[in-house]
Amino acid sequence: MTWDAVIVGAGPAGSVTALLLARAGASVLLLDRARFPRDKPCSEYLSPATTTILERLGDGVLPEVERAAHAKLYGMKVVAPSGVAMVGRFRSGPRPYSFALPRTVFDTVLVNAAARAGADVRQGVTVEDLTWDRGSVAGVVARTGNGQRGTCNGRVVIGADGLHSVIARRLGLIRTSPPRRVAFSAHVGDVAGVDAIGELHVRRNGYVGLGPIGGGMTTVALVVPVAAVRARERDFRGEFFAELDRFPGLAGRFDPRRVERGVLATGPFAQWSRMAAVPGALLVGDAADFFDPFTGQGIHAALRGAELAAECLISKSGLRSYARARRREFAGKWLLERLIAVGVGSPALTNRVVGRLAQRPELADLVVSATGNLVPARRVLGPRVLARLLW
Image (spheres, rainbow, N blue to C red):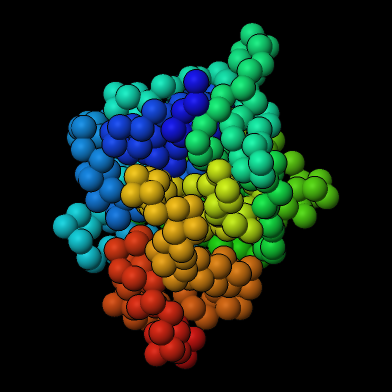
């Protein structure tokens, strides 16, 4: 059998692409090496604009997310190395908040929705390689949990298999750049001082993100340079809470006995694919681009990228049109994300910008709303706004 689409990876990008294509009548095979529900290191934050996409998906997806144990975040707080803090709130849109919930729940909601739409979902299947026909990708070579190998043929292969995408690697498309960072994250219960605002605490050579995810749980992520991990300067996993206590705004807020999910690691970040589409294949989600988790763009980019991929395939406008659509949609966000991630590596610059935002709440709201995809990134990237961030 030749499928209309073989999708590798059943996370948000893959599941939503599968749902939309299957709903349009395509035959879709969705493969994932994991079995759901499965956990994943992530900020587990759905930026406010993500809610609109979930609503567009229909089939009860948004109500199911709302019924699950979740938290709502109404803005973000950033604490600079100097200790100065700014708070920005989401000020646009019908729902001025974001959802946050465990990936074990969120991803399972989307996988089940893809299956209901008619996608053939196969879990516990590891994709190892691509097959080719006259210079075009023609399918994948996959291995099941019992070790059996087989070929799955598809008119298009969609790589939605995350930061360490097998599809992107086999296509030879991966590119990297500094700053390269790694994240260690855990679920911790009853963290002192957590409310309906996400927190980002910045120090030299790293930062920590906090976000409630419902049920008294908080996702806590420690992000450090990959060079520090490779040099084995410290045991970031084993000394996770000691590392957190190095941040003045976090010291004493955690009870290590309340760890509900142990420390998971992911990275290095600052990775993207040279092209998002080649003959017979395209990439969505983190497989296509993931720079840094500071702005929490990942899940929104995965879902919106899935919509763009499905639109191009359903309309038969061609794979090149998908690459163009991605540039139109994400170019400003990519630039804003990269500027912020690079700036966080400079304590002096972080102190200066956070200090300006602390004095100018309307500007802080604008920046936070842009990172939440509620307003266009170009609103922040204009010369007058950039000048106000520095002077």
